[in-house]
Length: 162
Ligand SMILES: [Zn+2]
Ligand SMILES: [Zn+2]
Image: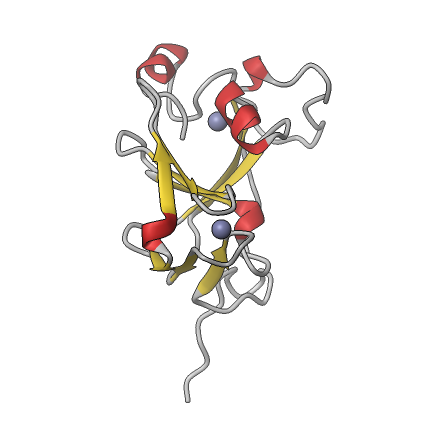
């Protein structure tokens, strides 16, 4: 039997595909069938309220690689005016993923919901202009975008974050 591919590449974490994850109560489960292509921290106010944290780490799957495998009927979504969809478990409230068709990476999986190491690390921070006053943005050398990492501040206003 062939070995499954490694999500993190030859020198990355030894993570096997599919990646799996889900919510706190176990109703909603998902899988990712190809290596993740990017990961980012978002410091926007919506992510702060949604997560309760200073920033939200999101991993971005390849097109078509992310799917819900259980509990689709338990999922709820909040779609703010001018923003992307924020999907969560209606039973336990766990925030699971966002979707914004106007983005180059249209799906953002909340990284804390993976069962195991997803094999990728965030490499960029966005919306640091709205970073929480009570926790300094880590001095980790990652590029910082005042607003959306997808474009200029003007484009960011047209395409708010997931
Ligand atoms: Zn749940
Ligand atoms: Zn955000």
